[in-house]
Image 1 (spheres, helix red, strand yellow):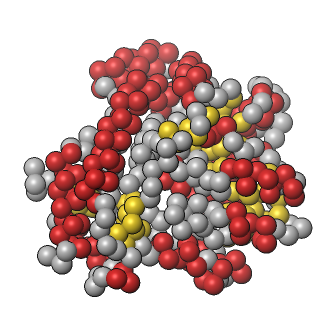
Image 2 (cartoon, one colour; image 1 turned 60 degrees about the vertical axis):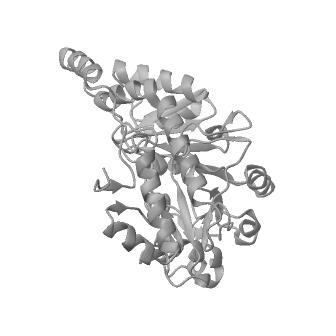
Length: 374
């Protein structure tokens, strides 16, 4: 339907009748939260699917980030990227940690290792990169810097569900990796998240943190918070695993169609697809270089909206430019030239498993017409 409103994303949903069966089990048991049997089953199934040994399920990824920093006892300053969703830096703020922003690479938008070392001080405790749009950060370079200076590495892997590099799960890198299962993500549990860790002791500590610090009924071993995933979310997640491979395959077809339609347009840049990476096609960003054309990204954004296509400017504004952080020295524009540039250029196009290819063609034609001046 050419008059259909197209949003940047639509959540995948499990089969309703299958979900009702889980709801009936929950109603019968009256076990709603606190590590119920469905929660435990989901955690086990997710470890197996992702190819990881240990993870701790959380009610959302922001609380997972907050708990991850607390678990590693981070303090002082953490070097991170301004080109991300605000939760990345907000989680540092809630731990009393100062984010120190480094510029990003101009191709993928990931934290650029070339800037990390010069930002390290005696107050630096960790590096917090983001695998932006699910594209892997420069892992070897970041790991080398961290080992040289004795720093922890926590990856915000919110976009990276089941992304693999050379066959290795991307979430296995760093001291900890955090996934998001928000409704807008490739894999969702309505709200939710997980922390992937390397050993049983760390998992136990993370499990304590999300449950007020309780070790057992009478022993409270840490100042925890309430960040437990409930049984309804866990049931939703178990069923989502049944269709995730097919949904990613459909996303792949959509991404390839966009690439075919939008290649070789002057003033429009696409992120290259990496051969050695198993992608999940969580986003499809384009970048509008206004220097050679008579309109800019925001003009294209409004043009698409008029034509019932709702794209999003992920990520704009930069975290470093919002009031909470704009007065930090590392937020000064001269230190973040690339990040400021791509934040003014980026536009994420609709991509979700149920987006028909005819609508991909419709969106692409609108973009091509705009660039052609029609």
